[in-house]
Image (cartoon, rainbow, N blue to C red; front, top):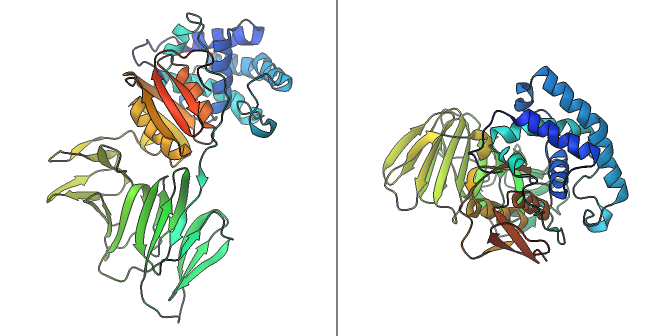
Length: 412
């Protein structure tokens, strides 16, 4: 989550030294916060774990499974002030020991790969601590509204599982896994109507279109589509962001229209980000092939590439994409890769349904990190504050962003 200019060849020793200090009770409050935060945040199984030598793996895991794990459990049992969320829930630790202890050794390599080990060189040099958690701001979830062709609005998160609507020869069904599915039925007839699914700020939802194409809809987004694809193509309209797994049909190309741009595919997987408050429309191809069309310009995109059209530009910018960063939202994470604070806060604003304002000029630093979207907003802000480049003040559903080191008690 930090500066990319730190040497990247000494992370195991620094991490082990930090864990040893923590286990022996000599860590500073900031070092304790760092260990506990990433103990809680990171899942096992990241590829970076395998980059460690066998000795490093053994040493880290012995320490994590032993003294550090016991010490964290002691802290949980003691219920330190400022660590308990609504209803007495431990918001930093939450008892996830089985999957998270090994996760910290994974985090060491993951943080290294993101340039985040720079933090270790700063620990102990400053006494600044993350601001105390006073307000939490719960994360978003599976929330959406379905608007039928006749204007009927159905709140999907409160609708019971099963049949939601019947439109001619199509049944609209909400599954037990919070996915909306369109299923053709025989002999019922009827015409085609256009439906719209909208996710609010703080919402996301999955959709299976009439042709079997699956759509993951990000927060503050909407998609308009027919109840059945009966024409020469399969056209939908998107506002916001969505990930598509397009069902193959060589006779009917799949078209997505967003912000006066069109993406044309036959069968593929891609992410399309077209929020009105972002400077670019970004089409990122995972598999297959797509062609993007804008202002009479056509550009083919290959797997692993991203086609971006910036406001005011006259052509597409094509480059290799960081697929992990682009798809992190779909997998339940925030992933910042050389991102500015403004871009990060736009993601946070949409997911936690908050207003973001700046006190003074935003910090110019670039941030790197990998954090779960299912944590409270206060935890995400605490992690960003560990960089010493930014701090925050929370005022209800408003987050004030302030450049520079945090100050104890600044957050209300």
